Length: 231
Length: 408
Image (cartoon, rainbow over all chains, first blue to last red; front, side):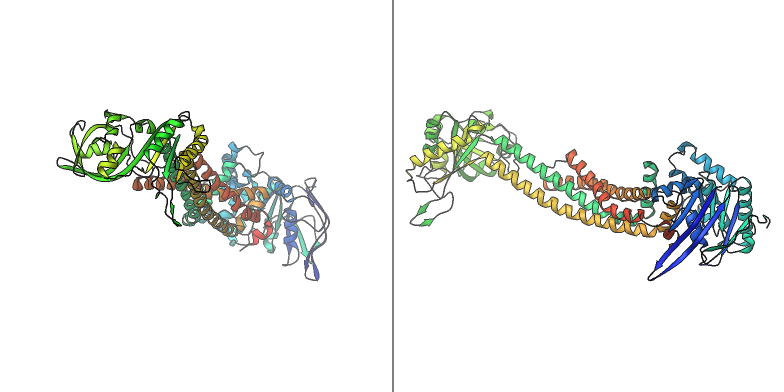
């Protein structure tokens, strides 16, 4: 088991009332899964993804990631976990502007002290090759289309070879054609062994995942263990 | 993240907003340039003055006539006419165990003429001991002798500048010049001393026996002098010598126990100390002003760094998401602030050296740029960057990555 969440609560206090963004969530994700988390806005799916991504800590509950309890770690420890174990793909790509594709992809290794500096450029080029941008190494984000930018972001997420890829609405800013390409890339990466957890509100995008989790009011409604991987 | 990469990121951020960075660094540039220039000019002046004073002779005591009280009216310093060459002779005779040589000095100014050339200069009436007192040799020819002094002969020894102006292409020795229409024979030319710190040309002088100046040039029946110059064997004897000279003069001038001195004693260490403390005061004052400008510059850097942190909130969020620790972020922004301030410091050092050189050239002032002042200024600018960059950097490092990623 790669990810194990048990009895997780996340409570926000707003004046006198407290809001349960997560209201007792338990979830297990195995290595090699491709999971789509769905739900209306305010259902808690983003909060869950943030906690899965070690960007946020739960109010209570446990989170075992790759055999390590991370729910009570310090900010610095969490940063290390994010660097080595997790890759992030965002809705708005979050590439550094006026910076070439290959330099964007190199970025995570600068925060990885065990990464050999001499292999940085070579590995970044390989990762861009892997997402089909081997001929766009020196283009800046302004010179790339939305779909290409998202592929640069995926190459960046793969740089430190993490076991888990977390995607927050990865096709939210893309046209249909680019969305299909990105989902095809996700499916291929999943087949190559990477676990993917993706938040989306689009049914046809979620349909690409092997497993669908639906959330409402901070709880998981359905969590079938299999889905259909075809689009 | 290694330091080189952090520096690269910082420099890229600085060069992305060239105008803004330059304006931000301007406070530091001006502050550092001011410090460098002020210290260079101040140290140059001090060094030059000290050298000058040492060339006059550290072991000199100067005796000036003091003030005089007559019928309750207090006249100014120098009004007393009781100081005479005989006092000088008495000092040389009675305090011989401490005193090497004594020369009186009587000053007057005059237009001097040789053939078609004329020159306005100072005439100093001194004794034959003067070369000993000042450690100043005759370069060409001879000094006057006791006989000249005794009978107030019209002879003189001229300084280099006077020689240049009256005798452009002749040897002055043996020629006769006219001072106030009276003929004086030139016995010699003094070795060149150059100009002193105040810009006074020490070679622009004519030396004659004090008796000649007093009786022939000033047409005076009194024998008071403007100053006695007393040179000692050793610098350490100054306090003892001052005591003995004071006691001797009081006795010779018949001053009662309740009467003030009618003379004043000034030694070179006193002048040295005065000049030193004046220079020090000025340096402190100007350094304070420069420090305030550095403070203002630092605040400018802090301001721009806060803007930079806000502008790059999303970048901070992304860097945190992909593994930057809070200390990575802290270091990155402090480095950026320090790069900005040290670049400003570097430009300031160059500007300061340039400015000091310019002032030195235009004002004919000596300047002295020491490595230590450059190093201190440079380190100080780095410290300003670190100090004022810390708060913005700390704020950046404490940001929540989720909020940063959502920041619009």
